[in-house]
Image 1 (tube, helix red, strand yellow):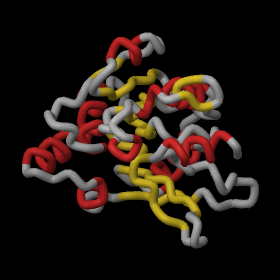
Image 2 (spheres, one colour):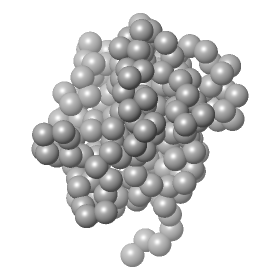
Image 3 (tube, rainbow, N blue to C red):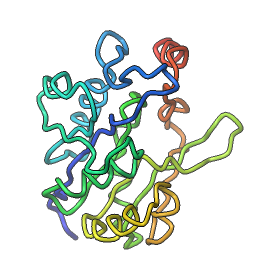
Image 4 (spheres, rainbow, N blue to C red):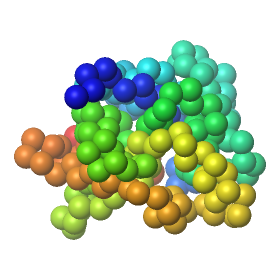
Length: 207
């Protein structure tokens, strides 16, 4: 059995337009007194399986993100091309065999996220491990921005995005993907609740 901890880089996706928040920079909105991106960073630092490095993908207010103390990289594709552009930037900058992606607007994600995604990636000999979580209707659905990726996928993603591909699912379906449900007893039903609007952010704060 391999007892050495795997080398994993964490990537916080904060590169969106924040259009449903009226165009404000979502990662810099306060949640319980701290910017969402900082709450996300702290959550990554508390993971039961430690990360080797953490990066932020942002496309504006770069100095504000840099003040959080980790490297910040804008999309290598122009025009706010969505989360896959962030995945691409992360894979290009990642110096470890594995990259974990998390969005900046879901500050209550599980503290064993990395551990469980890695265990599934390993057990299923997959290229990607993706979290799945129960939603309001009770169905457990994939959460495609919560992914653990092998950096060998960079070439495939370059090809996909250069061909105009922008949908995460359309790309991940090309690879062996382990879906990891977070619906066990003891898993929080709110762990993957995200804030697309300021109202949702206030609702999250009250949980």
